[in-house]
Length: 176
Ligand SMILES: Cc1cc2nc3c(=O)[nH]c(=O)nc-3n(C[C@H](O)[C@H](O)[C@H](O)COP(=O)(O)O)c2cc1C
Image (cartoon, rainbow, N blue to C red; front, side, top):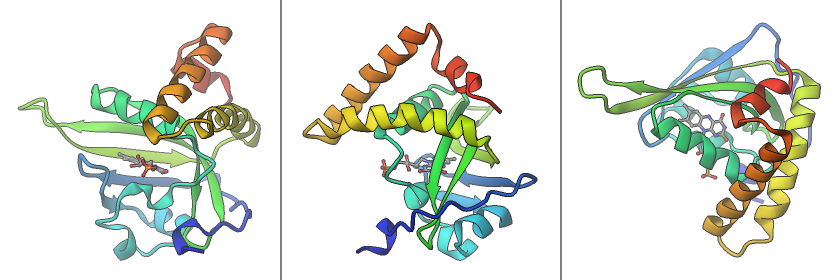
């Protein structure tokens, strides 16, 4: 099994007073990682810098979540999400994440992204996971990644419509 897909199924207890911070270039390549990020994700700072942020991607996260994230960020808006990430040792950790584009005030151009993540209530993560599982199920039925995202977005749209909320209202309804 490849090192970057190895999973133990063990959840890391995320410290309640910790904030994980990272920055990327416009392509999602890591340009900054704070000490907390390295500690929790079990990487050295040298191992993280220059690598795509998908280095901590966990297969339980639906493609749809990241498609919505990138669309939101590229339109210049901030994005919030419950995210499960994979540490280098195969353990995983849940966080409540905030990601924001870094915009050059002179040109209006996006010059990178900034993200901070903190401990997330287990009940909120479980509620997010229930929706992510539905999206994964829908995505898995499709033959290509592109079709998977299209189907996932349609399913997410239906879920939000059914609940009568926007994506952001849904995220904040889950807990803190
Ligand atoms: C600032 C920033 C922080 C990110 N943090 C994470 C993260 O913690 N976990 C994650 O899986 N993806 C994160 N991403 C998204 C990844 O860049 C990538 O889109 C995602 O992991 C999906 O990867 P894939 O398209 O290769 O499957 C972040 C992106 C940015 C710009």
